[in-house]
Image (cartoon, rainbow, N blue to C red; front, top):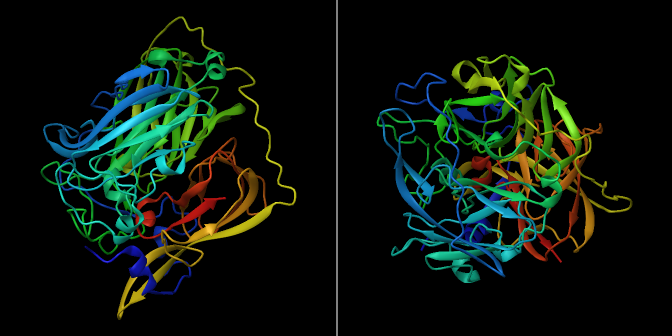
Length: 518
């Protein structure tokens, strides 16, 4: 067995935790759009807007009873035709990329049994779910491969957080209607796992949202936006140190800041095109990229702009109108676009103003004839009470680049408060039902995600929250050399959870820490 992470960290000296060490300044400085390095494909790429958009299938429960709805998902190696004429090997939930969508009702318990037929261990995290700690997808709560013996960290063996070849996740889902997603969360290997396809939508619905009259059915589109790179044979390129994904974690030199692909995929399709009616549509945007940020804009713009109705944690209090939307890895934006404002036949392009050339384009909508549409956008969507932060504990969490040295070797890593991740160390121990203020400080772009509880953004750099900070969030787009304050209410469950940077290469290189609700 390899040396445990705990033993490894014990023998390390943390040095050089200042911003920018070992990272080219241009990859993350103020004014840049993403922290990372582009990985060039080695195959001719298709022309944008030549392939139709696909919508992931909705998974049917294996059974439903008085205890809830019960699903089963098998993780396995499969193939997909992502680039025309080429076959790409993927790791897929039920063998598809993205995985099947799960739709559930608020307060109705959902169980999902995951079976692992992949060649590596995996971990499943329901991102944004209010979940008991044993079902949250802690990074060593493995689903082991069926019929395979694989090396595991000593810590996981000692702690007993092991399953055999399946694991049952129980989700109470006592939370408002929202857009969640599930993805791999394996310690040190989340980046390659998600890159290879382990991601899918999980939609929570409730009566309050149903009563609003929002666009629904075929006029509700789930749009998972991500970037990838491809080798000459159509296989996915990823700069892993260990292509087997079993022993040596991390990426090759130069990509430590994050891996950026040069092909934009929406629901696994490169630069797709979607035919839409002349009516209102609800677009649920998810940034499932490892490291790339997007600045979404419709061209030509709709007269009323993109009307945001929801975010990571559910509905906003009232709609917000945007000409463009900045979305960092793991964030979700729920918007309504009125395509009836365009003439039939208009081609409307969803652009990425943070990208150049092909990467400045995401997908295209072709507007059809105007049709009857009884959907609406209410002036009030829900009630959001500001958290009371008077006299609460304030903690500072610093997300900085750094170096770890051991046995005369030196490697770059990413740290929280100068420390690498260790399963044994907690950065905070908030009391159940307490509210705390966390002051988040960055050197480069860091999308910070907190498990279990959503939060409210209080300020950025001493100023009010930004235009994309409204409502309940679970991931904040922390920009270079920025300080933000958030208010978190730690309710629901006691136990150990994590918070981390959702630039997946940063996460895999130790930018993660524990908090324990006591």
